Structure formats: C-alpha cells, structure tokens
Length: 187
Image 1 (cartoon, helix red, strand yellow):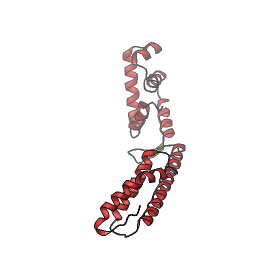
Image 2 (cartoon, rainbow, N blue to C red; image 1 turned 90 degrees about the vertical axis):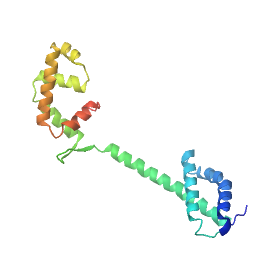
Image 3 (cartoon, helix red, strand yellow; image 1 turned 135 degrees about the vertical axis):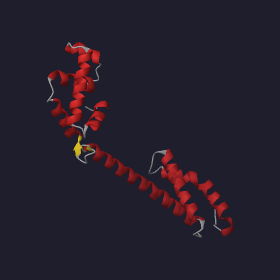
Image 4 (tube, rainbow, N blue to C red; image 1 turned 180 degrees about the vertical axis):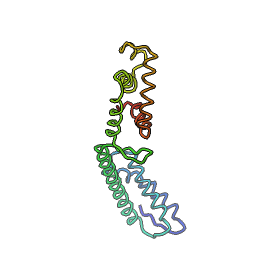
C-alpha cells in the first residue's frame, strides 16, 4: 500500500495509515511488552506524535513505516527502562528504614520514635503501662483489660487517660505521629 502525504490530503492519508497499521504495530510491540493495554497505549502515543508532526515532513509510506516502527520499538524500550527504574527505586525504598519528620523539624526513623515511646512508657507504673499497651497495641476493650488486671473499668479508663496525658507532655512533638502508627497497627 503506497501512501503519500500530499498537503491537501494529509488527514486522509494519516487515517488510512492508522487504520492499516495500528493493529500490526500493536502486535510488533508484543515482542517487547506483554501487557496488551500498555502496548496499545504506546502505539497510540506514537501515532499521536506522528499526527502532531504531520505538517512538518513530506515522506513516503516506506519511510513513514520505518519511522513508526523505530518509534514503537524505542517507546517500548523506554517504557521497560522506566519500569526497571521504578522497580529498583521501590526495592531501595523497601530496604531503607523509613524516616519521619516532625513539626519541630527533627527527623527520626520509626524505630527511634518507638524507642522514645517505650522509654516514656517505662517511666509509668506497671498498671498504667499495661493498660496502655493492652488498649493501644493489642486493641483490647476496657472491659477485657479490667477483667484481666482485676480492675474496674473506671480505673482502666483513668490509667489510660493519665498515660495519654504523660505521653502528650513528654512527647508533644511526636505524639500525633506515634498515635498514627499505633492506630494503624504498626506497633
């Protein structure tokens, strides 16, 4: 099929080129990329780029097909290269200890934040610390804790409130962040 890009007929020529070669170029892209939607997106992007440049070049169909093939191949390879960078970056991030910044502009790892929490909790009487740990870390209800520790529910509530007050005073800059992790079950 011979397609020429004459000035008066470029839209029609492009339409014929797209209808004739979109599917074969999607199949060609399968040599590089398994995912069908990704292949179709890449080929569509190549045709869109060609459409954007249609006014700037006067080439015959053989040159155009070679150009499209090269663009599809390069786009597939660029996609794979970018995907590899993403995987490598995700792996590096996964291996690193997360770092958290507080309002006081101090930066701490999660382990350091937990260490500060436990140091503060260790300053508490045993019952206060136990109530806090059972409630926040283990998610137990006040009635369960009261039964296990042989305390009233009011005492459990009071211990918990006093512990939170102490934590609020001792760890005021870090408490919101710590409570976020405790609530999400990361402790």
